[in-house]
Length: 213
Image (cartoon, rainbow, N blue to C red; front, side):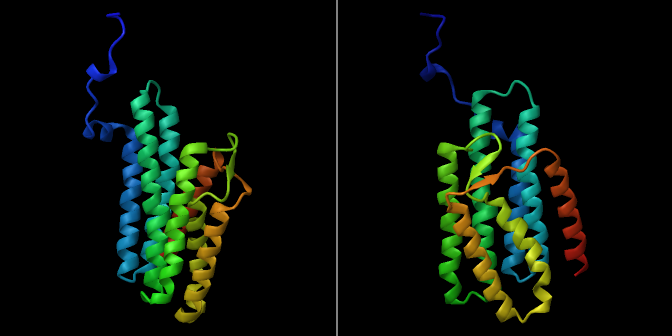
């Protein structure tokens, strides 16, 4: 009887202790990137906002890679890391695109429904994913949320060829359309392995291009 430790007598680790876990450090750097992106989106510096959110994607991919390479992580650390990553995804791929759409649309009331759909789709998808996970090791149900901002950051390169009013409608349709794919019962691939290095290259190129623009 004494060999079995009563869980109620085992003290819970402190919240701060989890910050020292390298994957969580990486996740928080992604959150910082997303928050910077939100700031610049609100202030109208949309090119810089794109840079911020692209690096949020890079850190989001990196935290899982780091977590899998570290041996001996506790169940507490794995569970906490998963919850932290999911909540940060809401900010990076739900709150950011919703605010970006609102700001680019001049905070016009007509853009509010689209922003709500984007935010709602993100929390619905992540809640579902947290329960059911992947269909298999390489397949998602629906389009993963990070794809939304990867696509948005590419499409936004063409913004200078349109009047802002016209392009705001294009962005509106694109982002709401992607939200529909986020919740659709379709199979989409999970990009991993060499795709991480391609993502880094993509983020670096976009950083240079948007910085130049």
